[in-house]
Length: 183
Image 1 (cartoon, rainbow, N blue to C red):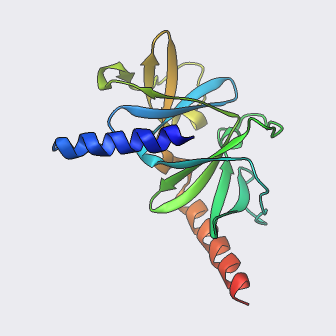
Image 2 (image 1 turned 120 degrees about the vertical axis):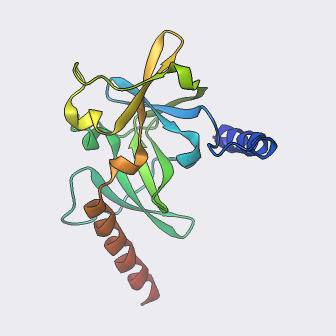
């Protein structure tokens, strides 16, 4: 998992040498959810954690699995498969939590397994199809299709994984958790 830190470090150094605003350019963390492989721009990825105990939040969407404690910080966690309305899977030793920063909030994404960090050139990213076998729920989170060799990765917009209502529920749960720790 040090690869993420190294990729970010290299990208930051590369950005300092140029005046481009996109950092780190063309690097994606890929992972498996269901039968598909997805990619997240590495700039959103903070770290990858092994699966750990999750404290459930009552009366939230089924894909919001709850909260984890990450070095004293309480972080909401969502199951990517359930978010895409796919069948749930049993968590195992390959299950990971990708910690991303979305709208200045840290969020954990439960994925079946991490694949790799890949570089996808801008010319190898196509817009998502408007028809096809991808259902509309999944398609609204995908902003592009990245060609990597003979395979494709569905590129996700992490800001669309959580809607504003989800964010307010998670913030309230986070505030309640913080108040309980102070008591």
